[in-house]
Length: 173
Image 1 (cartoon, rainbow, N blue to C red):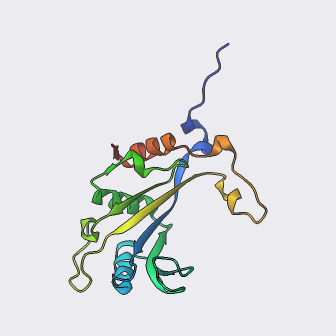
Image 2 (image 1 turned 90 degrees about the vertical axis):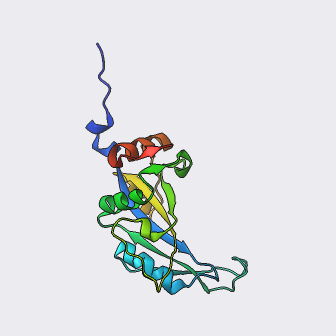
């Protein structure tokens, strides 16, 4: 008697989905934070948060001084990620993926994104894009009572690469 092997498509708990997309600009002390904030708000359409240093030895900047800005996108993630991947010409490297299935890449200039116009007052600034993937059932990590996701349910690097290839048509180098 042969046992049929169930594929991921038949198991709704094994299907991978986008959890969030985080855009980040590290300004340091040289880049104007207000310009970086305007760019992230233009690109994402969401409100931006300014990040501050936690302690003194962060790039020799005093504690609680602004050092960058970030925005988290949770709505219309699929369409937004497709636009960001077009700025990278739908190509990612194998090194962009970590062992837990998340991936990140950089956009050198915001005008590479389709539909973005150059703003002379702001100039040219690039940013980082970090994408978190999850499966159904990952919400147990956010409970007050400490719980862990099982080893078989975690996303592996190979699964994340296949997901990005299939869903977004990205070429992996």
